[in-house]
Image (cartoon, rainbow, N blue to C red):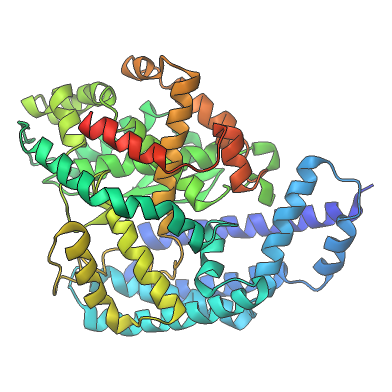
Length: 494
């Protein structure tokens, strides 16, 4: 009854399996590959990108999509066809040569960045980034012409389908107003508190063991994933084989631990996607904003919850030995310490949005042609001084070179982090309304209520619904940034 649709579904399975191999090769490139292997790996990944693009733009697909739209599909199939069509339109907007050139430029820039960043080598990094930006602008122009969007919106749409920068601005506008005063108020409140600092060093081997125990506490399935080390933490692989990474500092265990908890949220989302539909676009994570809502549900909403410190405390004592800093009340103060800093991934929950506002403003200007690579340091310095009162002049490694996103060509991604924080606050507000005993359950280590709610409302729905409908169904309302503000005020000033 649905031969065209079945043909399309079979083609999607093939794309999924090839993308599986690509994802593992990318993880290996970041976590295991020796440095001299990068050029060959970059060429191989560009070849795979070209092959996937060729399969995604097969001329036969136009007829199959048209015929499938007339077939008697059920709701699941029709939602899947919507996602297949969306990806097909985006793929057809780009020539294969550009797809391969983008892959090669991004891989070369990202690999060089790994050594250029610790050397504070902006002069060496900038030429590579110029090539990445040139190709990203070409991609944005073609996608914008195809979809009738602004250039930046065309890239944003790849990570947050259906979202427009005007909507991001509406969500971020109140944040720009209340965040500076909130940071000042929290800093003033915490200045009156006594906090015991942990005494290191904290051996990397012990930190790794601690991270694995934290992942077990949060339900990660080690039969379908693993934890490794890389220059920049990430969660990759595929739902059947999730690959997480973190990085370690022996003078401070918290960045690695909270990074692992963050990536575990990503990993559990991937592991919780509907297995019976894997290989089809409908079974993929809905968006990067929704994805970040899972990592931030784990790291911030739950991982920085006052009661969660009581669950972590015995693990710290087990791996590092007992010391006063690991007492639950003090540990919670450490986990929620607000201190403006240079590094986004190490930022506390209150100052983190400032890092995203900065990057969103700069990358939008870069893609729209209102700024160039050579303008980035001055723009960065000015915004860091304005938003967080920090001086980053000349400090490129802790400034505009700190993130992997721009060297890897991921323009349009950054807003998803704070959108994710807003979604996560909305999820937990909904859970508390539906389960008034939620906080007591977390204190007892009964985390199943959280996992069950996320599985039912987010993980298992995958891409069945477009994002506004997913959010409405899960929480009973559209995205409401007021929940994020209320969460921060309650946790840090309540």
